[in-house]
Image 1: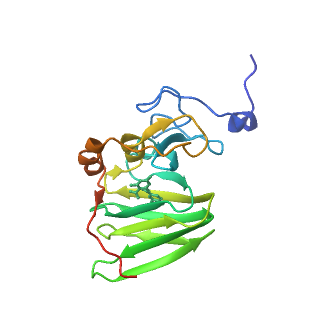
Image 2: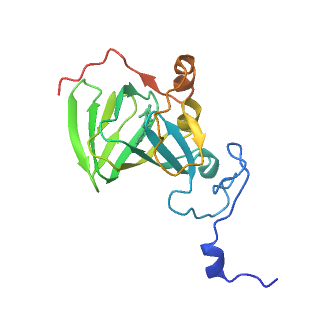
Image 3: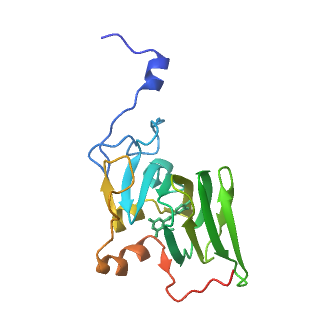
Length: 195
Ligand SMILES: O=C(Oc1cc(O)cc(O)c1C(=O)O)c1ccc(O)c(O)c1
């Protein structure tokens, strides 16, 4: 067999076995350059969302991640915070209303549309609502020495599908008692938005 040229190599989508998938396009280590075709990251369904992870702790030495989150219009993620995790919300399609409270208790609300960016520091309560069908957010969420992306398939479920779940995936109630805290997620059921 002849060796592929550099160009051919760059077009290939390799498959790996990782801690999380028997077949993944993400390598199981931090030293391998790689490419992932659109939509072909490690996918999970949680509530009405499709989350696609393109890079996570395994690939980045636990320093950052990169994922997309797509959900149906009307979808609300209720108030929560991350004690030690910084988060990016970069909207690439549709419209997403982000609510965030700073460390002094000042609240803001902003409609993000394609190309708009929101940043949520650690310890800041936040929530969001998807305002348009086919909305997509690019996310980065990490803390010193840890990333967050496996939260989605731990509370939700891994999937090979490329679209939103046909019916929302609602975790069993006992999962809420253990999984969020493992990933530095604290839901705030009594939180009120004044904006
Ligand atoms: O984590 C993000 O969104 C979520 C999606 C879910 O289906 C359930 C959740 O609890 C959350 C959450 O926020 O905790 C998310 C989405 C987009 C983004 O840019 C992020 O940084 C995080």
